[in-house]
Image (cartoon, rainbow, N blue to C red; front, side):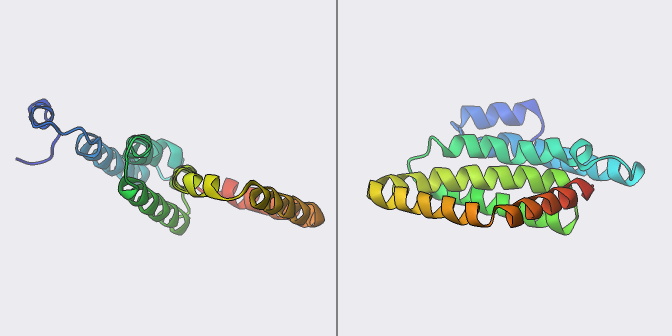
Length: 159
């Protein structure tokens, strides 16, 4: 019983043919998250990378990697939802690590999920959209540069 942290529990999962990474890594990620929470309480100046980075990465990255091999988009959509939730929690708590890791996972998963549809579009449409994007970015370059500087300052100010 209890958490699936004992070696015998993992052996039972493997014997049962469980190949999904979540049953193996989720308990460890939750344990790392709880340990990070206690560390943050005892050391309030510790960075979010120290206290939450490994837990968030362990919770998201194995599922992200596994989603690349799935035939259906179900796992990918669930990873995307989880990553967006981590981004929202990271932004709400003003924690840099969950915000950054969740954002990277969300972008990678979204690109992976959308790639087959982008490939199905006519080349001229993709080139036209890319050209339009470049013109818009170029026309508003200075404003975008200021926005990026402000965004970086705000990101750097997070815990």
